[in-house]
Amino acid sequence: MNAFFTIVQRDLLLVMRRKSEVLTALFFFVIVTSLFPLGIGADTALLRKIAPGVIWVAALLSTLLGLQRMFAADYADGTLEQLVLSPNSFTSLVFGKIVAHWLVSGLPLVLLAPVIGIQFDLDAESLRVLMAALLLGTPVLSLLGSIGAALTLGVRGGSVLMSLLILPLYIPVLIFGAGAVYASSVGLDITGHFSLLGALFILALTFVPWVSATAVKIAIE
Amino acid sequence: MTAINSSIPHSTVPILEARAITCVRGDRELFSRLDLQVSAGECLHIRGENGVGKTSLLRLLTGLAPPESGEVLWNGVPIKKESSEYHSKLLFLGHRDALKEDLTALENLRMYAAIDGIDLSDVEAFSTLWRFGLKGREDLPVNCLSAGQKKRVLMARMLTRRAQVWILDEPFNALDTQAVRELQSLIGQHLEGNGLVVLTSHQPLAISNLRVFDL
Image: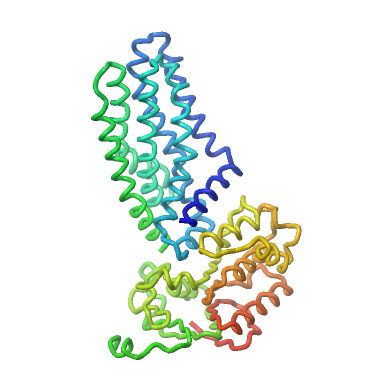
């Protein structure tokens, strides 16, 4: 458990020492979502309709930008080998890296969402649902993304391959995440969407750290 | 064969053993049915030309990669079975330094201590870094250190890791003559403390209890 927190803390410290990589992904999210209202103009009805989809797609893509970072640096300098040789369970260390990734690339999206939502003229209720859906959905993005990051370790042109591998897996999160916000804005029941997002989260939480750890071990061999 | 071997009671002297291991990289067989034994207090110096499989052999001994056939045993138990137990006694330094460039020497040392499950006090961390000539450089990011100084951070890690088995890949690269002497005496101390060492190097070594193994 101690080793888990050490990894989270270390990854956050590394991000603090090199902020540009994370800030790039966040600015990407803000700019992409701001371009739509600017391009479409003051058609509030249309903006409200496209808001959930646009915000969620931007969230998927900005998560993808930071994924390569998850294991690549540790792989290049040999740190991953040392982590595999640690007496602590490697799965818990990999899980620590996933948590750190979410804290710097998923959580900020949740916090930025209300500001972005206002640009699309979303009402307070929809903003709350948007934040809740992102809070439940972005951890799934980090978890699933770690599989892609692990599988493409050491592969040339890995980031493109990773996008191709991972984006299809993101589709359920996109559908139910955006669906929840849309349903709330038209006054439909949202519990179904949240139950499915929650189920995806629990499923990913249970299996993904182990899958990613195994993929990393194979890459190191 | 294995049945007979495993029925022999385990000796009390800690021992690292490879039984009939075969290593294949790509399509090429690097070595086959290789046997070796290292017991506590002994240093095994693996020599051989470039590309003969020294690093691959070390990786098999650490358990990072499984052998094509055969097995590696620690105290008579296959390391695959008791990997966590074995890894708690193992220090492996590969040819990449595994130091985080953006963290300081002290932070690197503390991080590895926590990951390896070792209680490292501040006093011990500082005194170890000072011992290897890094006084005043503890708080510099590692990317501000020279190649030789990075190796000294690694030597500090070797000491604070308190592992019984050291597996070192080319530990003498990038070291000046003074540091080579220090590292040799560090290895000597480790052997006296009932440790065992497997290393690769292209230069002749002045370490007592050294056994040379030509691959």
